[in-house]
Length: 626
Image (cartoon, rainbow, N blue to C red; front, side):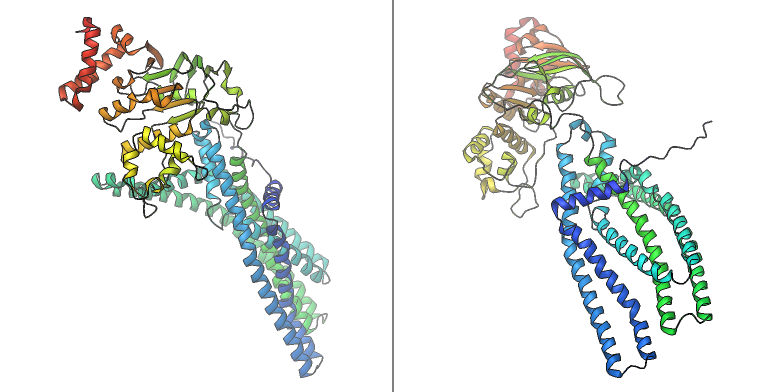
């Protein structure tokens, strides 16, 4: 049996590097944040020293038998100083807060931008998603390291300077005392530093619990789930899953606290040792008559502040170490190496007038940890201006093929070429600009109809937008709305509306048309439409695509008749290809699927006999199939 201890994972960045990162970020974005750290530390040090010398100064004045006026002046001086320094500290803290929040939100924007623009395979990678979730957690509140680190730096600077000042005062008593105090300080810091890495080593586990609980919380508030929750009585089940995750999270937190408490215990024992040593030397000095009453009070207060200051420094260093590990988690996500060339590579300027050709050469693709290829040895050329339909049963690999064509995935084997150039050599962001698409899992934001179509709130081409709306079949619906295209979608705003599934798909078609890209991808774009509406919409596609390359996925085979070519995907390969008539005449898998679909509609007598008409035409053209 292997009894070797697991290796501790070393952070990708040191504490010095992480502190330098946050300081350099503040220097670029909000320099006042850096200036406030020493300013607040200076005000706090002056306040601490003033408080330290109040009583000794008054005692010394009383012992010197000064006048009431002089004593009152001393008291008034210290009172005014304390009021002024307290006010200054509060004012500086309030002013510093705005810049610190801005820096934290700026880091949050960096995380969001990274998530929105990073390579598609990385978004689907669970390991990367854990990094993203952990980084996102660290910008959610002021207690997160991305903001709280400034308070820690200020406290550490203040406590370190105070330590030096108080150390110089106590050093006049006995050097052995200082040696003993420093020794216990080093031991205490070493123990705390060894234990504080626990949270970093278990950050993935913490992120998993948080991600699952957040997912359940979001789903419980999602209005699209509200009907299922009530019909299927899902409340108890969702609460049970959430409570189970909560218990696991609490157990994880308890494990962490059990680790950290040993550091607190060690720190407390060492603090008692330090205090005992200091008080022993101080009492001996009093008994020898080496200290006056004022000096005794001064040193007595100094001892208290000094010993607590050592604890504060250790706590600050330990906290700074934990915050550094959190900043390390943020940086690990921000610095994650892109799978694709998102910024480098050959640039492309989309031009609908250029004839684009896409070719797949012996392409195979297997998802990570899958047992077999989803697609195997695909050879396919999509010619300029061609309309290609991809059909096949669920799970055949149709959507994966679309992802390869769009450049969301790279082949495990083989190449995808654009005009005879491997797409991996292109700047991937530029390559995406060649495509306009409607996917099955499309996105609709709670913004206006116009913004959802144009994907912007500036420089909208109103004429082109209305033309796309008309082509997608939404003109009448939008004309009936009081605010027209300025109407919000969703219920976040008072004027928000809900669109049906078919209306949302038409909205996405209008968005795809508005982009006016040279290549159009439609992955089940009309699945929420009835066959009549779908047939009418597909009849317009020659006009809508305007001679551009177009690739469609559809389960309703009658809707693909207008395409120049149809390929049938089965078991990860191209099983059949040709026009609709050619595939029907071949009497293979495509013809069988078409027959099954048309028979269903004939038997049910649905939708005005669209499939009856299609089958009558096919029977007339291919009597051998009757």
